[in-house]
Length: 114
Image (cartoon, helix red, strand yellow):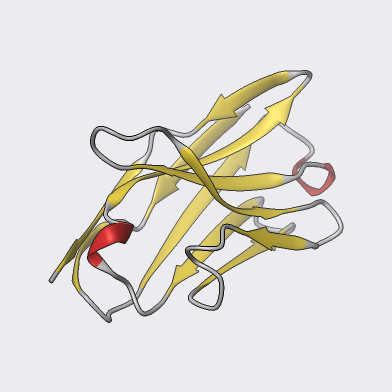
């Protein structure tokens, strides 16, 4: 699997960003897709997941603020992030499991200033 994430940047607290991740070398519509993040000095954590049938789950810390979605025609997954907080600052990664192995995109940095 190849995953390419984009859309990160610097935003003020309360602002919004939309992350995108394009996938290739997989039958995208059959795969659950996930967004993770890793803040400096912290472990990587699951932020949101969208299953192949469109069901979604979110970390408690982002519920009501972030929305994950997918476009099976474009082989892409998105993360709409609203009401951003400084604690959302992290490198965000898209990910999926392909043939028993977890694949990662290269990560995109989100920095939220207070």
